[in-house]
Image (cartoon, rainbow, N blue to C red):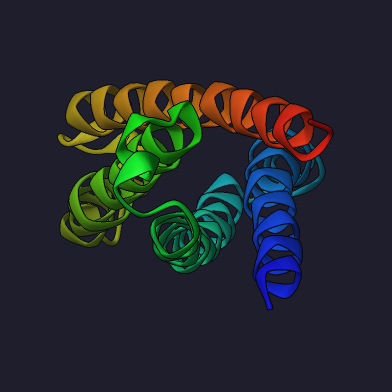
Length: 154
């Protein structure tokens, strides 16, 4: 059973970190290059980021529970536990904090595109904050993948 839970943890780590990288650094940039309607591209990008956020919450919760069930209190002294915790917290900040505010600004700007409205500066600031948080998550994800790989070959 321990091997099954570890295998699932590896798969979920791969899904979460791979999803972050695939959406943030492949799919969304291609979307904005290929889609001439930037408002539509932004809406679709927001939906993709929300989905990868929900994936992150699900994966992060499982990984924390799995780590505690395997290592008990010792998990609180493991870098992997704190890396997953930080990634989960950052996911929640974006998903429950930044994204809803950005969505609200888009709705308030209608019928204009938010980038052509009085809310443009605030939206750009939140976009930069979200992008910075996303980059930190992605780097933590790289650390998590490397650390998980090294731990599995001990």
